Length: 168
Image (cartoon, rainbow, N blue to C red; front, top):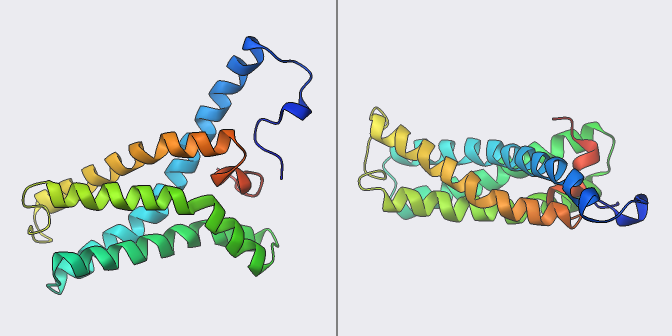
């Protein structure tokens, strides 16, 4: 697959060409981050809710949230690729290449934020503090992953490897 901005596909170079590609790169990185954050958030919220509801330790709750975040994050990428007719082996390789860095960053930042926000991990499910802390931690996680996604996409890596198969 070719990178989003392949120099071989263009005959114009220089500062004007780079400036023209910048908004497209930023938009692609934003949508890739939002897509990744969607899957990550589903798993993270489920893990936090289940762990809190059944009284797991912070470590066990975070472990469950991380596993579910990776599972849902990869699934959100794999389903459209399978629908596009891609073989399972290629789907798995593509999802791993596209999402691993982004999900990992989001999970580290999100869970660190939940641990740092006073009382976030101890709040119960009926508490606005629980939900507000979780929402804030996910927003910070998405913001942390955006520059990495942008950097990867600019180099034809990360979410750029599935860009042509996804409809945003």
